[in-house]
Image (cartoon, rainbow, N blue to C red):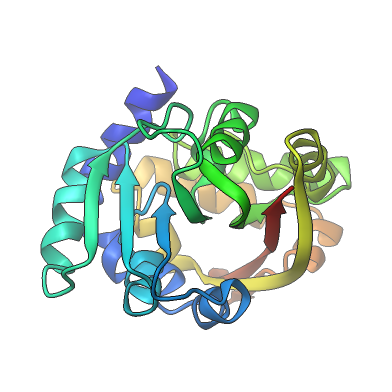
Length: 253
């Protein structure tokens, strides 16, 4: 059921994930190349490619990149958008059941997508399986705070705004999974990411009733929550807020 919801949301909003400033202009994109240090003989895999921004970033530096997504309409739209780039292959694939042989890739990436996966552990096990020994895995995703009330607020908010959202994990939870599957952390950073409210809410919702519910949930949040998420309200109109994002580079032992 969850994966059906993901397909529905991303089919409907396929173009917005190509143009979204959050996805297309993030300051993390140049770091993808800097951290991974891709080489011309390498083959890379971008899981849940969405608008294809990581695939586009890596393509000039690798021999080939395979961009996967569970949503056919999303992938077709991205393939059309990136058609001038000739070394990207597009494959419809479930992140938790990748259709590739063991030890197939030098690099695996996944950016701003894992919070949609129903079983993150299955995803990490698949990453470990398809990576070559000493291969590199780069994960970038929105994360929940280690504080329970912050975690509850953020995941509730995202679920309200996007019913395909599963859960943003805490860094401690991701660390446990990476350790379990012998993916050794080489570098990492946590940063605050500012979201423009209007762009964020319009990406997935078009019902005024749903939008009003999200608006009320934010406006009625405690002062402490509003301070932590840096919620900016001007004349009772939400302008922006921030969330936490984790970028982590791992190597397969």
